[in-house]
Image 1 (cartoon, helix red, strand yellow):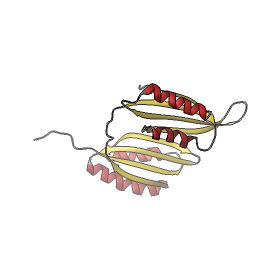
Image 2: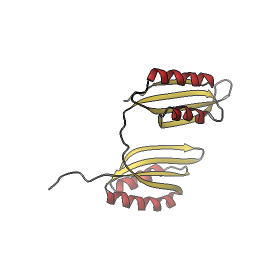
Image 3: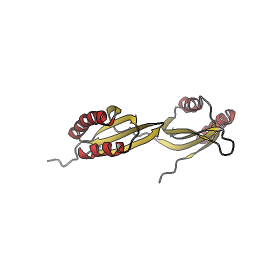
Amino acid sequence: MSSSKPRENYLVISAIGSDRPGIVNDLAKASAEYHCNIIDSRMTVLGGEFAVIMMVAGNWDAIAKLENTLLQLADKLGLKIVIKQTQPRALKQTISYTINVVALDNPGIVHEIAKFFSSQQINIDDMQTGTYCAPHTGTQMFNLNMIINVPAGTHLPSLREEFMLFCDDRNLDAIIEPTRNG
């Protein structure tokens, strides 16, 4: 008789709707009721909309019941929801780096930075952007924070130098440094 743990199944849930108190509570409650564990999540308010993306894990039966409940809950909460089953991410030998960029706000900054890393075969793992008004002048500024996964074997000093030259050419103030865990 085997005492192995049942295989976990994974579900990614993405939802957006008008911001109001209680959305996180209702989504977390539904997950807990079916004994699903929230493994990872991102939640934010953009304008007047609340957006969430989260991954839950549980046994097959629990995931199936949660999927059904979430579709009903979405109507009740006024959310547009997308649900997709997934697998754990394949582990690759990479080094995690944090990127911070500040510049005058300009259309296309995100595209240019994403294109730079894409051309280097570097995956963007997480990214947050925003704008704000500079103190004293009120000038519209752009801020980007992201985590990239640099493949093992990449010559890191060359990557850092190429990225800083790229930023200098576009008048972007940037920092690239190893991600500090903990």
